[in-house]
Each structure stands twice: as C-alpha cells, then as structure tokens.
Image (cartoon, rainbow, N blue to C red; front, side, top):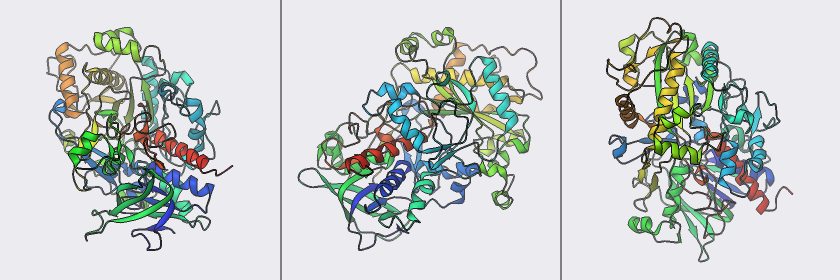
Length: 604
C-alpha cells in the first residue's frame, strides 16, 4: 500500500502531485490512476488517515468538528465587529477525505439556476449532470433518470430514521404551503423548492461515504495501482516554478501537529501537472506563499510576486448558520440526545451494532422561499429590490435551507435546568445566497503564521443577510409550533423576547390546541432577533469561492499566468449554491479528473 508518513527516498519525481487529500483530491487521484495505472501520482495530505470510529459511524459526526479534534483544521478569525466582536472558528477537513470524512453527510444538489447562472462554459447544469451521476449509487426514487446507480458514493437513508418526527415535519411543511417531494435534487422537480425525506452519504448498512474510503483506499489496496502514493501528516508550503512560470515541484514539511521533532523542508518534482486541492481556506495560502496573489497582500507578507492575481483569497463565502432548539414529546429512542448529552456509552452502541449508528439525526431537508408578497415587503424596500433583481424571476432559487435535527446541539449545561431526561429537537437554518463576503490571506511566508481571516458574515451594506435570517427564524418557528410533538422553545437558545412580547418563549406540557396563528412580531422584536443572530450566527462548514473561476482559474481550472497548475476544490466556485456543499466538492473532483484525463489524452 502506497500510504506513507515519510516520503520514500526513491520517490523524488512523479507525473502528478495533488496538494491536499480532501474531498475532491481523493477523487482526482482515483480517477487518474484508473485512466492510466502507469501514471505516477502523489497525494500530499496534511492530516492523518481517516480510520477513526468517529468518522466511520455517522452518529458521532459532531465529535469530528469540536475544538481539539485532530480530524479538523480550525481557522480562527480576528474579532468581527458586526458579529458582536466575536472571533469565529471555522472547521475544515483535516484528515484524508477532507470534509467528506467529517461532515454531516446531508445529500443535496445545487439548483439548475446555480449552475446555469454562472455562465461558464462546461459548467452548466446539463454539462455537470454526468459528473453528478458518475459519483453516486442512488438508493432513492429516480423518476427522471437524473441520478447515478453505479458510482462509488452510496446515497441512502442509512439504518435509522426518526419516523414520527420526519412525518410530522413533512406534514406541517405541506400545511404551511410548500410542496413536498420524494426528490428535490433532480434539478427540475417542483423547481427544487419544498421539503423531502432526507437522503445522506451513508450506505444502506450504515457506513459513512467519504471519498477516501470510497475512491482512494480501494486503489491503494489494489495491486493494479502500484504508482499511486499518499503522503500523510505533511503540510504543503508552496509550489515552485521555472523561469517560464511552469510548475516544477512542491515544497513541503512534516506537520508539527503529528511530529514533535523539527522537520526539514523537502521538495518533490512533478513532470506533468500539480493540482492544489486544499479547500477554500487552505488553497489560497499555498498560492500566496508561492507568489501568486494580490501584490499588496504579498508585499505585506514579504513574498515575491510571481503572478499578480488579486482574486486569490478574496470573496470568501459560507452559508451562515443559526440553530434553534425546542422541547419535545419525542421518546429517547427517537432522538440522539442519549449520546449528545452523555446518557449512554458510545462503546455500548458499537458493541450492540445499534441501528442509530448509521444515522446523522437529520431526516428532512427543505429549500424554502417566501410564499407571500407580504413576507417580502415586510423585510423593507432594500430587500424587496434585491428580491426583484435576484430571486423573483428565478423560481428555483431558495432564500434559505432548513433541516430538523433530532438532538439538542448546544452545550449540555444549557438543558440541565429543564431535566436531564428530556428529549429535544432543533431546526438548523442557513442562507444559501448570502451577499456578504470575507477573505483569507497569509501574513508571512511561514506556515505557522496565523492568517488574516474574516468571514465577513452580515457585512452587506443593506443588511440583506440579516433580513433573510429574520425571515428564516420566523418561518422555522411557525413550522415548529405546529408540530404535535412541539413543547416550546429552549429559552437560552432563542432571542430574549421580554415577557410582554407575543413572541416570548413558552414551555408546554401538551401541543398547542386548535388553530395556531402566526406570531405577530413588533419592530422591537425584530431588533431583538437581529441582535441574537449577530451574537450567534456561525459557520455551516460550507466555505467556498476564494479562487473563483474567472478571477483565479479558467473554466478548465488552470491558474492564470501559470502552466501545469490547477485547482480542484470548492474555492473555484464562481457563485454560491443552494445545497450542502459536499456534493458540489465531489462534482468538482470528477470534473477536474475528466479535464486532466482529456488533456493527457487518456481514456480515449
């Protein structure tokens, strides 16, 4: 098996180097070695192998992204004034398989208008559909033949569903006016707006479907791919060029997170191509340390300019998340609170092969947009103008996504006052086309120097992102209040409305009876919601857009001004997508592999 923690002395030059063994990088390596097993390929991954129980069992997904986990890289911002002065921490994949090894495994695709709206040759919805199909074995209903059935990644319900919660939620969404479907992800059905029973990147027998295990490891274990190599626990410093700005090598060192002793800098040469695949937060620093980026940024960091590209590290985007928990009448067998709140031993679940191990606690996915003109006008003239310009004529473009979660997702200490034996549910909400932008840049040539990173959340000049979140808060709360299992809000995790407000939280012993009227919010209530959002909004782990097609790379993912250098990860997306972004990352990997295979004349 070509899996190393130290590069063999004999491996000084290869055909292709992939800097980053994340979601897309694993796919590129696997597809290239399939196209030509004689092609020598080296993947350099900063993290360890992904053979951890918290990764293998979907139920334990939160353990991979909590502070202190070695499965994630934690990027910390400077204090952001618009977020109540908070420093935001954004986790990214830090093991082989990248985000696919640590994410929440929700299966959603981008909308047709997302792809087509980019206007990039080769990246329209119809042109990307073959790659979307190629990556998956889909176990859901496929009415229109838009899903794949023999790809590496299984898409299924896994081994468990909280059925009562799922059924009640879908029923209430439909009562509220949005359609329900058994497939919102086929690019066209119901314009992709509404709700559906969730499918996930989990196999029917309950295993996480990450790209390391589904693409890369089978090739490493096969005798037919002897020229595929993976170097773990190693950080890429920069890419080296010849005088004609053609890539010639990668400079790297051992990751000090795993190696106590000082490690010298090493290089390995690439005969054909170097692909940077280190994610939206990891790829820009590699480019900037290589001399590719904004001359102003490079000058401040004391790095010589090789190629001036101001788009590197700019235009950072992330779907902005808020989560709202509720009391419920669910039983212990219908939530994951027993694990999240420490009531059961995870080892016991593993020993008993408990079916909940193959569950990610999210059984419905929703893509929603306002149903009534009043909802739009109530958000003010600036929002109405933005709606008319960006949404009104694109009926498949949601304002946000929500998902019910059968678990209490916050600090367990917050629920102790209500009783340790209670059961909860939560609703996660995130905007899918935020107007705010951030950035990430290096501050010196050194790997250890902290980056200049700001999410930029909620910084758009007309407060459109805040208005979208206010709409999402009110929308999800009206859905929650109509669920028969609803028993009120978990007060510390909702806006602190005063007792005199009609929006103040309640705690019930039974569901709301009879006709449930919408809560009437005052301008003061809206101000309280806004402040709560600023104090609590956080990452959805969907970082993208920092090396966009059109500003940093062309439609074939070549870095402008260089030869032989490509990028393959979510940093290249020219615009955001109304989806959980793992599907998009895998599609980028498949697309990049197809482009490289074509350029090398393989597979013909």
